[in-house]
Image 1: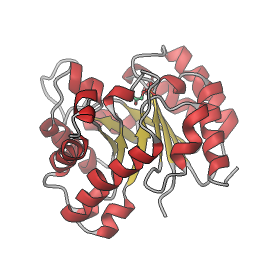
Image 2: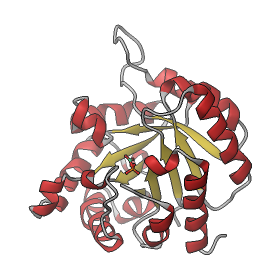
Image 3: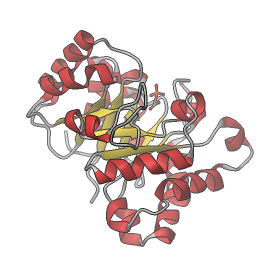
Image 4: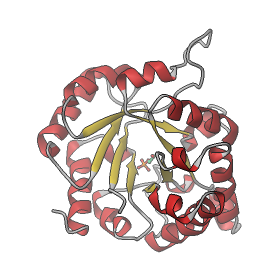
Length: 257
Ligand code: PGA
């Protein structure tokens, strides 16, 4: 059984003070929650203070990106050693980083290996564009992203990752894949491919979140789908009211409330 996992992706929002305030209200609402993992992926500047605000709670902290070298002349980058000091998770290959900052399947793979080498849990994002979706290319495209991300990674290592299936056209747009379509894509482009690459047990062990305009009103219909193990939430993770309602609605839909 895969433990459901809901993570907030704060993107480039929240000063340190704002992040700490949100973390404190989430802690007040959800400390002691069992049966579901929670995390907030904050800007790098807020990792330490948010981590302190959540220390000893069941809400984990994640970074949003990381370089693969341990140290060096790489201005502006964060190394795995630096991330590891402050975070349990790191988002890798988010579509915004692929689109605006030149991430490729190859750089995602290098970062993925670096995260595993340092005991950081990667949340690896994959998903297709609107054109690919309309052109019926979703399954081969996402399958190729999976092949690229997992190149050279053992079954034992693979089980430690979290995947986030995020159709690019659903991110921040208010549009979502239907839960049924997302479920089918996760099965055909992710679990079947992982079964081929590794084995059924490994494919079944890996948690896959859905992401893209997740809101309190639609969380339940996604989380009940058999292949969907939670959500990566952007816009709606920026307020305690909406992120809290997403978590509560997911728990209720799973009969854990
Ligand atoms: P959204 O973002 O929930 O605002 O659509 C999701 C994401 O980018 O992870």
